[in-house]
Length: 585
Image (cartoon, rainbow, N blue to C red; front, top):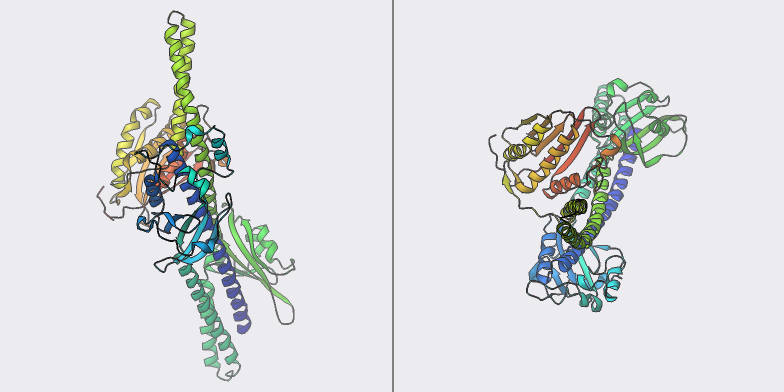
């Protein structure tokens, strides 16, 4: 029995290790490739916008490249020509040098998606290198350049830098003559360390299981020593329990009747079930139906490896899980039970959604910038003509009133365009250590009159001994004002707006903005930070999108919880200042 149990656990450990290794390798390449593609698109968009709208030269483009490379996991960013000569680099001292092994990558075709390879940086750090053809003036389809050749885009050609020089390598004509390649190197060290830790854990578990099997085998030769055998079995049982309890994944075992025999602590944490209370009970009474179908005694078939399921336990929200199951059969071929292993995929799903959201917002930002640029110029002309007719029709009240309506609507449209540009342009913050409680008090003072007009009392609760936060006070106050005003506007019949600051167990700063308004419908919660999504008849749908962007630019995160009829709570979490200074509240 001991040997069989050890063999089963060894198979489970090895299967889990192989599966985790392949999954981590896939996720590493997928995540870093997507991040590299997003950075390349951001750099191309920034270069294109800067050179077209602000007349940047290569000095400004080089500075943009250095700022983009100033991330913890980015080792370098370089732009080279076909021959591998470095035209721009996150380390300006390397401009003009030969990029190592550039010829090995080949020359990507225009429009081709990004490629990747594993390499080693100059400082012997393992690197994940993403590269592809670089041309900020072509875009995805080449349509912008074609229009430029036909004469429709001549007004948007780069005007040169501040001194009138565009620069040799970033001039549009050079992209016609010389194909350029952009390389982004990411540090693979965290992934390698995590993989080594997994291998060490697997080796430890396998070693313990081998010892377990060997101990069971030896008991056959020392059966006459009852006391010694009993003691060894007790030790072996303790080791097995510790191994199962220490597994980082949920593990449940049922007998041949479908009754639950075992649930480790990880399984209790994921499902919210108490192992002592469910032990001996039929699995069908406590587990969701889709999970029962994998482990039921009446469900024959091969074992299941890494099947994704959304399982609901009790009244809680469904939990996305990766589930593996196996039927336990004795040496006579008799079914004796089922084994199921599951992992909570909530964090992985959240990471995937965050990546998809960033890609979606990047595309919307590019589109918004182009639309705003094209609308604003003729909008000024429309307002000028409306003002002209307003002054000319001073003697005709009806015509003058119509002209005033045109001016007002033009101003309103111009405000929408300004918000659009605010959302589309790259975030630029002047972060410095600041006391969050002081910021909150100042921001509340700014909307006090609006709250009184709406008959909404204000309540502020300041946490004590909060660390300072590296923030841009002006930008962060803008973020808070958007949250306050949204809450006040939602409480048309009165209510209470509460603002609270505290410190999390991890040392982060937590700000909660709550109201007692009508709340947000469940189906709208996942969309409230999307641009142009609004439930207000007069809203633009950009307020919360800008809030989300400001919080992310401060390396923070924002979440929302809402109960229809009871109110809404926005939670902003910010990292503490790197200076680790604290100030008494």
